Image (cartoon, rainbow, N blue to C red):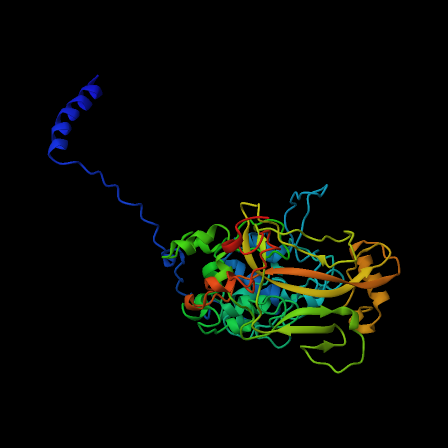
Length: 475
């Protein structure tokens, strides 16, 4: 009753007023969220000098770790649970697979050096631990954690086969230098994946140690460290690599710092629902250092002139490209994965980790990828890819005998080997997320939309009738 009376009274007041002058109700438009990325970048903590805290001698890597744990006792249990230590995921249920799958560098196949099983010592030089030289490595031993590889500030720390410190490294001097991870710490492994600088990732190489703004606006102009985006809690580092991951948990997104619609032009903002930021803002990769785009293992073993970028007897033939234009695919954050023992169709390239998503997937966006194409060994009778033994006694790099390498590698992974092998085409897909260009170098409308059909995007393979600016939407 009281409310009804109040409304009736207000009506008596307002009606005469409307006879004098109409009342205009103005609702201000909602303001778009301000794009303020710096509020999400963590401050860099002041360093703690360890020069007076570390006492020598330190006989080996585990001795260093034991010293670290006297002041950081919780660190070991944190690291033991991480992907950098385990190189393997928790079991994950995957569509089309009867049992949950575990995946990681520990057991995945790629089309670079193919796989680590039976080839542990050279591959595990990048493991954050000491002594992984065979399948018996104990992942529960805290003293085998390598603290120095992520925290060295001396610039003199080098790891060798099996993850051990290289001969000649002054462990006391390195331990005294430690601090928060730098680009050099991360890049020592991630810039050199696949056996050398710029091999695997078109957007990660040693040019990012001290880049100009042209190479990467975040690291060059704004002096970002890797850990500014790959933020870390309890030694768990944010980020996912589609080459070794089945899920997209703990992933990094541009919108961790930027708003979903950061542009002043709403026509551009309208694209963010279906186009990844990286598509426009990383127009090219391998800007300063050429990256490997093709690897043909079938030519290995021949006595031909050798060159790192064209041919090595132990590895075969290569193609490297600089200023590489990405290829574009729908991507929802995860990829399909070839697993050991999966049958292949040898009449077409085997896609080892094709991105999930299509034009009908509301979670998918058009993303830029580096696609690495290769020709690698497979069993012609069982019709699956072979994980060969390449390193060490009996390995291909020693004896140049593919049959022996296939037999030893198959034994190591528990797959039957028919005694018959050949070489088949494969493809790997690497999302492009680094080497963000300055805004004035971002792609413009005409780079993708033009009447002559010569834009970057293949609209037909993406599921459109043609350029949607001229032909409308889906097929």
